[in-house]
Length: 89
Image (cartoon, rainbow, N blue to C red; front, side, top):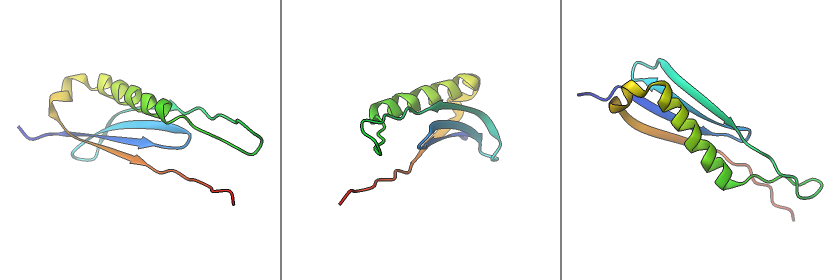
């Protein structure tokens, strides 16, 4: 049987999004979890990589739950993560 669905995972700065697409390109399900920012000092901002990972797992689980009956037809999982780092000199 041909695989019909793909899960895309966007690990963004403000949130983590999981989307399930049919191979035709139709969006079938989506879930989003917000990321937390920590400000240890004035002018600093940090994010917890473990929290982002947990958010990704929860978003994928939620999207899968929305299309549970189709899951045996999922063929791929793609993750995008873009990070911005600033070095102080």
